[in-house]
Length: 191
Image (tube, rainbow, N blue to C red; front, side):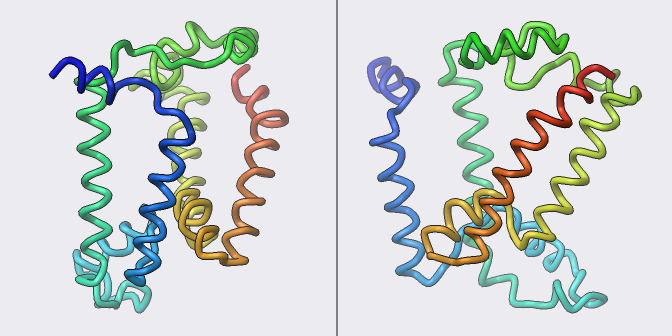
């Protein structure tokens, strides 16, 4: 049993994970389905009855139940992985990234999944925490809806389906990420 857990919990190389993702995407294409996590919000709103007051949510949500089950599996799988298969809580990032983040004043970068000096309840009531947690969360939700999908929907599903809007969206994601990383984030971290 320990051998299986050691095998599963090791970092998997790209040539294992990549073909598995491709196999899933080809299977979805053959079944006429498209994968996307953010589309589950529309499904959940429709289940809650939002379709009675908004046309966007008025659709046959039962056809998307498989995507909800998939998302639930991701959450459960992530929880199991974090609780039982992760040997330590440290995030393995490069020393150069650690040095850069320490230069911005972050304490112990890579010691946890997120910088706990920013993402905690006390920080929520500060300007920095409000921007990172509340404004950042709103912008992610707005951007996902405005772009017609999230990074997984466009970069994994949309590109494998050769959709031009997904290519444009992915290019936009990278440009936005570079602008955020090099032009905006350094100023936000000094607040």
